[in-house]
Amino acid sequence: MPSVTCVHCQAVLQSSQPLPVGKAVKCPKCGGVFTIPANANGPATGGTTAGTRPSQPTAAAPRPAAPAPRPAAPAPAPATARTTTAGTEAGRATKPKSMLDALDAVSANKRSAGSRTRVEVVEDDDEIVDVPPKKRRRPADEDDDDVADVVAEVVDDDEPTDDEPRPKKKKKGKKAKKKPAVPVGTMVGGSVGTIVAIAVVAFLVGFLKNLGGGDLIGSIPGDSTFVMQLDLVKLRENPSIRNSLPQMLRGGTISNNPREIQPEDIQKMVIAGALSASNDEPVVVVQVAKRLDLAKDPSLSGAIQKEISGQTVYDDMRSGMCFLQTGSYTVVVGKSSSASFRAACARKSGETSLSPEMSDLIGQMPSGDVSFAFLSSKFMSDPRAGDALGMLTAISPQMGSVKNALQRGKGIVGKLNPADSSQMKLDLSLLVGDAALAGEAATGLNGMLKQPAVAQAMGSGGPKDLNVAAEGDNLVVSMSMPIPSNLGSMMNLGLGGARNGMPGGMPGGMPGGMPGGMPGGMPGGRGPGMGPNGPPTVPNRLGI
Image (cartoon, rainbow, N blue to C red; front, side, top):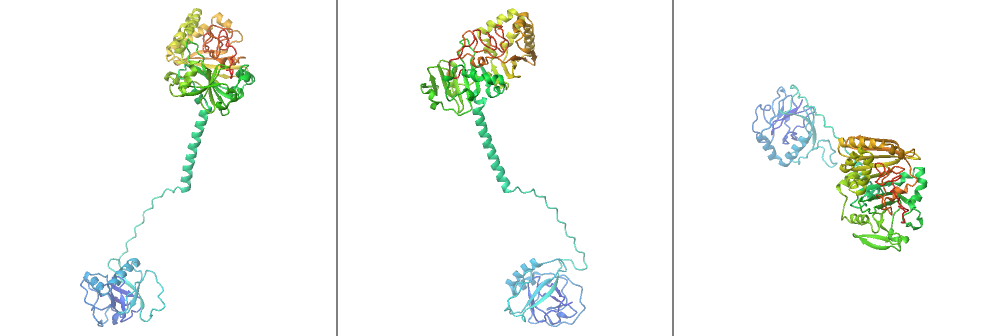
């Protein structure tokens, strides 16, 4: 196989084709240019220096004008090329620009041992042209006689020879699994969806607050010690109540009702106020289904517009009622002389707030068609309550424990739901806060119910399924009672009611009239929570 030794880097170049004798070639290893000697195609290794490539690196001799022919010699085993600093510098001195460019080409085209590298042969006088890694077409005007292509193999000492074992290629480590990229559309869509969801929730919270009981409770007086909430939407589902409810709400004064507040539009109402010896009338907070604008209500054109605690109210002198709009769907109704109405205006302005005890009690108020809560300590501070319980204790001494539980307890919470077309189920809890005292109160109340006078008073039309028990530190009472024909009495609660009765009485009063009624009814209760003289028809616009 023809071979030649580079005079610059001493690399041995072997070619499967005859080498062009006398032509200037470019070394694919160092980029140096030298002339092919005459004996390059003989059996011995050719070159411009005598003998084969030296085993130790030596400085390259200056480039001779013409190579001297050498006798043929047996071809030695392929030797590795060793590049000396002197040889490299000599090559660079010959063609500095071309050598640097050639080194870049060799670095890009280098393959494993045995690979073929193209060598472009040019004349000494011609400029050395860099050869890219892949074969490219020469320009048409290039002289084919001056340039020869030679395929030569570079034997380098940095790469293994045919006799040396080739090193095994290192296996590439497994690429770390990449997490699937989240599409930009998904990210944007998710963000927009989150924003829309937040906006919808915020809207619903505000809308429901305006429609629900939360806004109604927020409109009650700050000094309230009792509250009753009626869900008229649910109550209308019972036929017995639905048929009589419109007349109950009108109170016989339908001609005086404001056009903005029609009975059939009322969805919820909350009755609240302070239990006190002054028997001050509570207020009624009404929520309707349609948006309110009392300022444009023609039926209130004759009302006096004034301010209470910075709030605009409409005082109707004909009925003695005042109206305060607290929301787009809510209005507070009360007597113009009522301290509770003035307290509602003050709370709307932020001047007052509910007491922590009342706020906590309202938070424990169960959900029902009718639900209620009142502070039992305030209830017992009324002298009339003490008198009524004193009478009950005279009948049954065991009722003394009930009196103690009412005085020491946090309050009473309960609910009233229609059980069927003729019965309503009452559930109430006295939050005693003391398990032993709750047990004594349950024993005392059960003992009172067994008294002959009480059993006779209850009669056949009295409560059914009556159950009194202590559950933990609470006294729990449940019963079924007839749906009162005059359900409006629960909605009056002192609005124009008799002075001798508590403000309206809570539901649960016994028919037949035990003084004070059953637990859950205010003292003086007669029938379903009515005072002794009964609340007369309320001469107001709402009839409530």
